[in-house]
Image 1 (tube, rainbow, N blue to C red):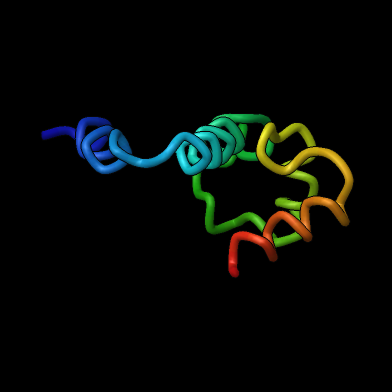
Image 2: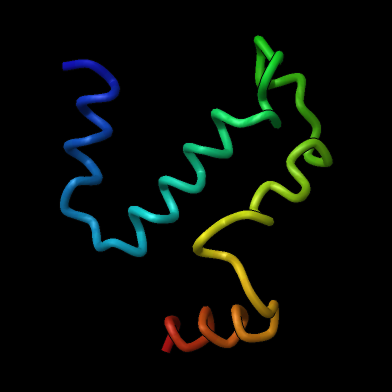
Amino acid sequence: MTTAEQLYETVKDLPDPAIAELLDFAEFLRGKKFHGHKDLSDLLLLDLIGGLENSATYHGDPLALQQRLRDEWN
């Protein structure tokens, strides 16, 4: 079984919000932040700043997002 097939088997039964987060992360990994880096270990934490500004999951008012996250914990 390929890695892509293993990934599909792992995520296929997750709820849509979790799949949306995974999609955001996958698009981030494929995007310009990692373009040209053969070895991801040479990236600094500062290279990752701003990776979610276009995320469908983490958009909108930051305070409203914090409240939604707190509500999920209860």
